[in-house]
Length: 499
Image 1: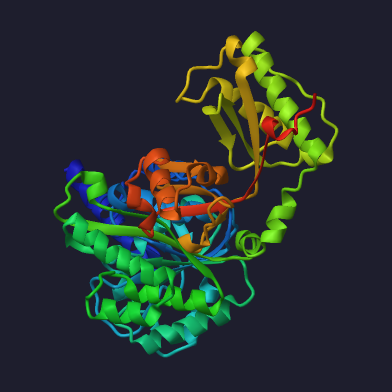
Image 2: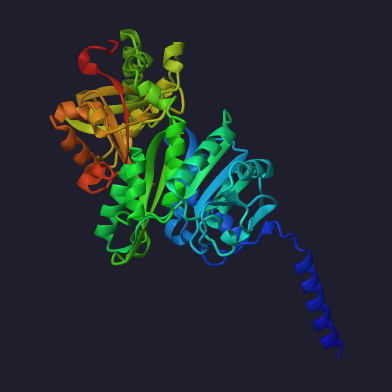
């Protein structure tokens, strides 16, 4: 009898708790399905995804396209976009998601309360959400649009990990007309104004259930339209199902908003489910795309004189760096000890990247470098000299008997910037960094083109195949990242060494 009373009491208590639960806190729909419901494992999984992404150059990202499949399939791709924003501080994240389950015209905004995941509740930016709803009759609070929807929910845990202090504005977009999208863009642009603490996330997967080759063909066409801002063509092709993007309405919004705000676009990563499962017969495509202000890195790219000026080294400074490299190699090979140079030149104390290359009888004997400077230039040269003489995996360590036959070359690098197109790359002038995902990355210095006589196409193909472990034609893939830089190159045989 007591057990029956206990069960009844628990049932009544649970019912009362549900009755008094805050209706403005949206409970998760797909926790335990699209991602784990265990908070510790969820946070650890997202952090692991983020840890596998390297950001070469922090940028002012304002808009992001991210996938919304199960984390085991698309989580790593999503991490590329979110990691790109990790250095920024956002107070508000507007999430634009497509409606998969409830058909309605217009836009539904979750106006108050918050969205709950296993990591806690993300608070809604109620002021922003209310201003959005008040701006247009087609912008409403329609809770049925959120009842089963996963495309918005799966973005929230990433936001909670990367931007834990940010409030969210959850938006589900229904069967919108192009004009409705334009009105939403006008409203978002007005509400964001001069704020730099607002991030817009457009949630979408790509093609569904084609063979891998067909999926990549469709998705690469789609990505080309996105990064070149051909929004009308993108909208028409997706509407007519010539191309496939379930969130093409939110992505069109992102493209138009980026154009209106003068942003640049970049495809950070592309993959499909076959890359995870190995099943290439029926795959789903995923991408991360960022829209960013190009004031920093691209300003340098558009001003080659500024790039060159930043690398200016006089003959004495070049000679001192060559002396440091030579002395370091000799001391390390002979004694195993690290040379401690005494440098007072402020120019050589600037933080810059550099490579040290060793030749023997005109043949490469070692080459190691640090692309992004992390310490004073003279110390970078010293440490790269040790690495080139002892740690290049292509060669045995330099021996004492070889020292007299070596010639040392130093390359001081500019900060890299993202290439707008392959046509921007000038052979013999630009070094190139190719990367796709966290596992595939390689670099050629500018002098490689001069030494080999390769055309641009040969240079890029060899870079992909030799250095990054990618197919030779991977540089044509819009998901492959190409960063370029210039270098000041000098060597002992140029007569720059100190006697």
